[in-house]
Image 1 (cartoon, rainbow, N blue to C red):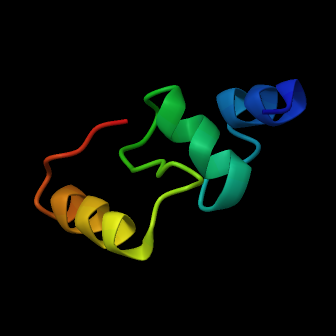
Image 2: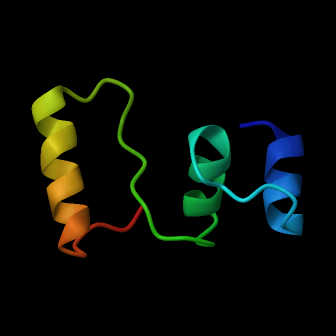
Length: 59
């Protein structure tokens, strides 16, 4: 991830709603969320999202 994006998320200039900013915010623990693996199948993504909806996943 770009150091610029990390810096902007930490400073609060980028919110982290989707894409790389979301991944940075989740990785830094600023927000809850899921960062699915790039090679995840549709079934795996659905399972991850269901688990996250129940509060069972922290990335």
